[in-house]
Length: 299
Image (cartoon, rainbow, N blue to C red):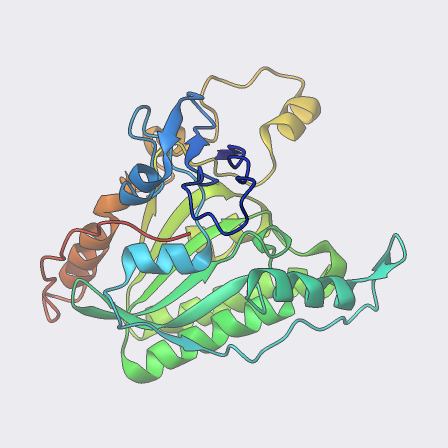
């Protein structure tokens, strides 16, 4: 969503005056229909445009707030920090320093946030990507956190929910990043052997190695409306194949029509759908509860 800024009203000449000022940041513009939306209304709608239904991107913490029951989330492995196995430098700046600055700016040490919580009363282990951290690309620490999450889920007999939005493997870590594809798949195989379900939620955009690994190997795959999902981008595919792609190619709706995902689910409905599916897969051992309506999330 593009932000619409309104200038503050000029301060009165009297510095002690407490007259009203026009607050900044009252409106946002929908990236699809370009309509202005009042910020508070946008938050109440969980950052979904009330006019055209466009699902704007969320931070990892906002995503957790929409899915996990209030005050039930406990974060895991927050102390793991991105390394620099290749001593990568680009444009005179080291990868390690760029990662440090990014972590300081967004408040997350990596592109994956993991932990335990409840969704509609059903205990789960959950992993959510943070797109602001190098496009939520998968590196060594990303893979390590995901593997540890699966191991804890097996120990505690918890189903796993993953929410994925990513650009793929992290180029600054080269082959080390590519190894995480096989590593995460192997971890989730252990989850399958324990007969514990994995529910994947794909959100815009989800590409590259994440799509090609754990995100699409789940027992049930949901996606938000309009989410772009694939391996390579449409432009690259058109250049390689020299063919015009069909309308809506790589959207969640296109993938649903071609059997690649199981359902396209509105953001507000995701918690109940996830909890219900887990309950069914676990033989109703953990029956999903009705969740109170989420009134909104803060930025």
